[in-house]
Image (cartoon, rainbow, N blue to C red; front, side):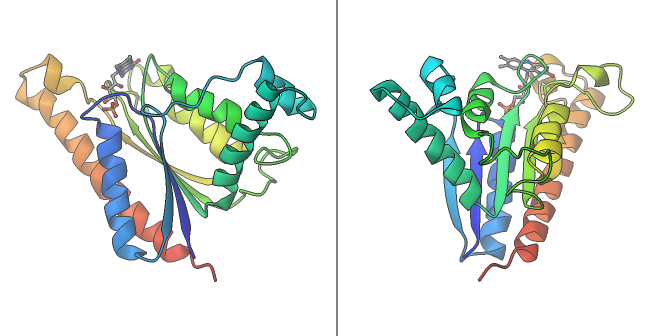
Length: 216
Ligand SMILES: Cc1cc2nc3c(=O)[nH]c(=O)nc-3n(C[C@H](O)[C@H](O)[C@H](O)COP(=O)(O)O)c2cc1C
């Protein structure tokens, strides 16, 4: 049985990143109707930010009810990641980086020796596909004036790819705020084109990941 972990994190409705993740899921379901999915909506049900109890359990056996609860949450999140053959993660850019609900999930789910390898790239997730679907209000593409302000895609590529070892594909819809900020048809076309290309890319990626994953 093939298993997908799907995480959404945008707080907006409608949301471009959620829309793209939904397009991925449609193509995925067509390609692998037998697959199972674990879904997390980090905006609707946020994972709590790591606190003193959660930090304690990273280094020692839990001693108190609070620490036991923190350890149970961390186990649940790490198991969800380890059980999944593939990861689909959607996120908006908020203030040039990932939303805090996604950072909270990473802080609770990346546990050294479990999901997080001692040697970067040499852990249990090495080689598994991760599809990261992002929505940016502006344009941070290569060569654009603000390309060095993107701390969203490069950060996730580092953590998921370089550290956890996933085979990461980033698919980004840019210029998403233009429909709210301009009437200029030429400018608006940038948002339309970017979203159309991202939709085609997520469908293609879903088919390609689904066809490459066969588990007894
Ligand atoms: C709190 C907040 C912060 C944002 N910060 C940025 C930003 O730093 N750079 C940017 O290009 N767009 C920014 N935006 C715009 C979003 O990236 C854009 O609306 C994107 O489409 C959000 O993804 P979503 O449509 O999946 O919700 C911000 C939006 C919000 C609500």
